[in-house]
Length: 406
Image: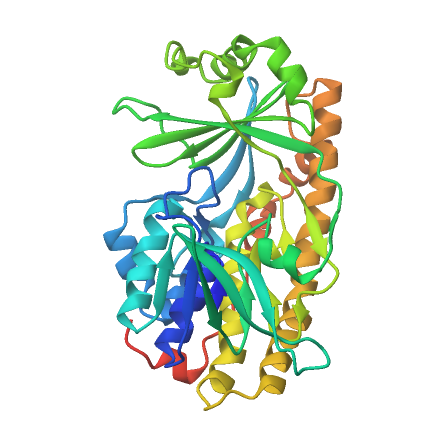
């Protein structure tokens, strides 16, 4: 049983179904139309999908853009901070694929392998085994159109995001690690004569940064602001944000006139959180439910997908047995946390440092990247090395999963 139809939840559902296990996914929304969510699939993730026979069809069938570098621009110069061309021989780029396209594409393949996917299914409570001294989780209660349902499960996987209701119901506590920035997002249509960029670009201004993501038919524009400063930004008005964007991207002149108020933008409160444990008997968390990461590096989605791949490898054997052994399922859940937590925490520590430096840069009015990064970019080969080090490693699928048809 998987609760939450984000990238980690849908991939896990697909992998378990492909491997021959019985799996049900509950998604609270009636569709997968998610905007301003992580959509950057890393080279290592694309390599993993390729082992499943999915990468080529995905890239052929789903509209996307590709980024081979992350660049920071100021009025004076451009720094290439990360170059992904050495990160993979087969996929030397990040693929920018909106979740609204990626998730239904993958969900259809999960259904083809027999997965049950219930949309509009709102999780309401965990069910516990009354005969188990540890109060083992044995299923969930949920509602569809206000009608209550209950479903038994050998294992419940909470994959329902940063505000996870499954995590809250389990009593597992999340601790904030100290994010320093928030982001205001806006999307607008791309025109044929618009300039070309790397696909992942940051434009420094004395009052913050403007991120530009190439979505193919659309651009996504993101204004970085100090965490918690939205009231001040509202007081300054939308004109200040428009001026900041046009100041670094002059071709936007007139393109943002439809923005009448800061309320027209979508606020992403950046969070970096850790959870004391990812498991309870009969329950495991993954992705943002277990560890929220900052958009810095664009790897939140990739860490969730790596969680799902690792957990599927561990669960598929026990779940194919009738009935599944609860102790083996709990061991699989514990194994996920032991294997994945160190990599996640390394990513989070780096993000905390990066965000603090960015907040200091905003306070000082410096439009460029932190001085340490500027110095490193002068080292020959640094950007390529950074691209290889930024790889998200995904464990190869176990044979029973790998052998399945895409």
